[in-house]
Image (cartoon, rainbow, N blue to C red; front, side, top):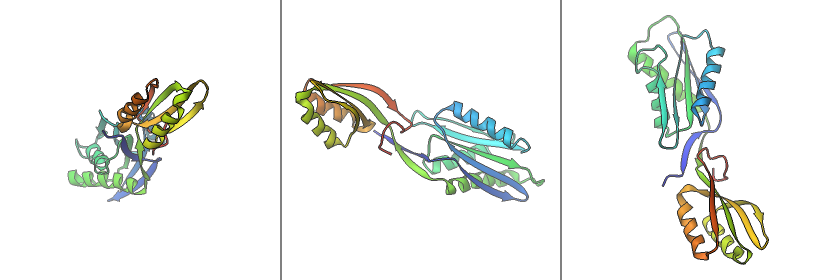
Length: 211
């Protein structure tokens, strides 16, 4: 089971020029389509005098949401080359927008494909690519007599925990990589009287310390 994915750490920029046309590339880490629409709106206001605002995004991990947009360029010459860079770098949870200022010379189909692809690549060359882990947050409840056994399992699996409460009845909040959740639960079952309650999944890799 895959529990990691690659994305960019923070917004990044790149630029490509061809025959007086300028292609400004912007990359953003995103988690929702609402974020995508907000960023697009901001860029269109800021670069309102540009001819095209072409983009591609991919949000996941699977099932992936993705979209490409040529924004008036010939079909397949802008959004797809941008998306191709997302795929070739193995990225997700990312939006890439390439803003074009037309320089007065038509570049042709191959020229446009190369320009949008190269602009996106120039941004990714400047970006910091990171790996994040999908975590499952669970609450563990168990009698104090089982504390040593539970802590042994936590240590063996390298699971992070917070909010410990040690009394006659103990409680811990744990962040578990998705790929080892069933194994972790299986070990707890052997201890008996340990209740493992799933609180939330963290597809953005932000609620856990595994990235």
